[in-house]
Structure formats: C-alpha cells, structure tokens
Image (tube, rainbow, N blue to C red; front, side, top):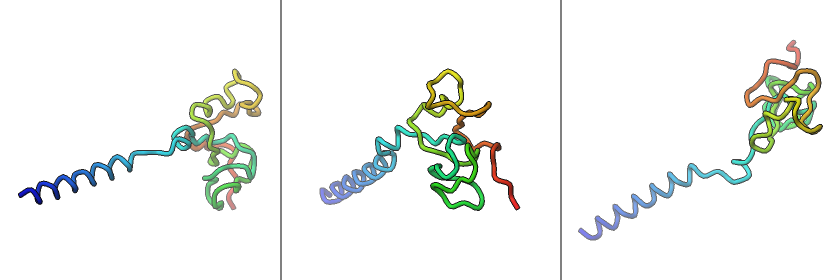
Length: 108
C-alpha cells in the first residue's frame, strides 16, 4: 500500500512540475512585444508576409506585416507624436501589436 501511495505522489509531482514549467517564459521574452510597421526594409525581426522567409526580409520601409521586437509597452509609443525622436515615424504611421494593411509589397 505504501508503494502505491509513493508512486501516486511521484506521478502527481511530475505532472505538477511539467505543467508549471510549460507556463514559464524567459524573462527576456516576457519583457518584449512584437511591433508591426516600424522597421526599415531588411531590418525586421520576422513575419514579413508572403514571399519572404523571416528576419531581414521586409522589402518596404515600415512594412505593415513585418514586426520588430521592442521592450514591452514601447510599441504604442511609435508614431504617437508625444515621444522622443527614437519613436518618430514618417507621416501618420503608428506601430501596432497586430499586422497592418499598409505599406505592403505589390504582388505579382
């Protein structure tokens, strides 16, 4: 009977450890967010849309479907007009936490 209780406790402990480990993010990843539409051509971190592979593959400045990792909370600062020069974007562009439908390469 003691062996069964010990085995059950071991399994429960292993499951609890696995579940808690699955929810842990590295501190660096937790402190960053994807910001779409702020990178210059060829300087995106990833997700540059159809016909591209990943990092450095955007072909248009401020391409709406290409993102760059920025410190958490900074994406909203891009293009809001109230921030320092590092957050300024041309014309009425703003950073977004979701892909944008502006400044996309022409298909075809």
